[in-house]
Image (tube, rainbow, N blue to C red; front, side, top):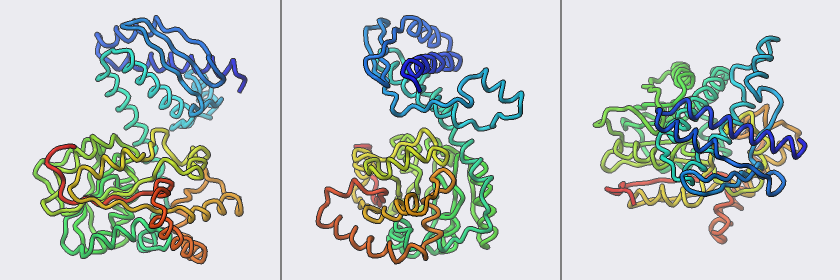
Length: 398
């Protein structure tokens, strides 16, 4: 995209983000945001950058780096969307518009915070938009799955599912234990834990995912309780507690601090918290993230070291384990050697379903990873995923 058009598009998107926000705020906050927006000045200090300056309520500026922005032709404006609809080309879930909205809403919120304006209402409005986008994305994903083809044992016990193998070994006997699966997705982990003897309650922001989890449970002859809710607002009875709280591949979709505040009061004395999520630093995985835009939501935020430390610090006893370093050669071969599109397949699912195919490569590389993590611990943050096991929550947030 030519530099001038890129700059003008960014200015337009920031203005559109302000307009959307004003229509979702109380009148007094909306008036303040409108006054602030009317005094904004824009310039371009460097390629793919936009500088935004303001004088109200106090002088300030913010640099928007467009490296993470996504500009496409389809669905980039309301008028374009109307034209698409007229010829039958409008997609119900427009990833183009959603990606742009997510990026520029976030940038606008950062600017509002820097300006000194009250941002509680703005933060709530942006959070509501994020939750709706997550719900729609995962509803669509659930509708596209062939549930009958899911092999529960393989999805959780394959050699290429090291996170779940580790978590299963930590949990021990599950017979009769109450387990909460937060962000259950399709229900593979929920159903697996139920097959292992746990009494499982599964929650997800997506009604479609909860329905799919119930269907998967029925196909495997177990029962689940499902509950539709965002992870930052579970809506469970205050006195409802569990022996185990499990959350897999979910923290990086959520406000981590708010999520932990919600979860820990539901953990029984002597209970255990287990999670696994992607990490932010590996260049191979970051390239994959940049390419795989159609199988990811724009609001995902892989864990940074400060996030890992913050989660671990919520417990008196915490264990952190790292997974996938040299083993990422499997993903490189999928993309380069086999020419498989990261937007047509979810690599992290396929590598488990095809575990038998990859075992001869994966197993020796996994052994190398274990030695590297032991001998060169500074390499651990370059992993793809991290698992955290926490016991004895601290009585107050550190």
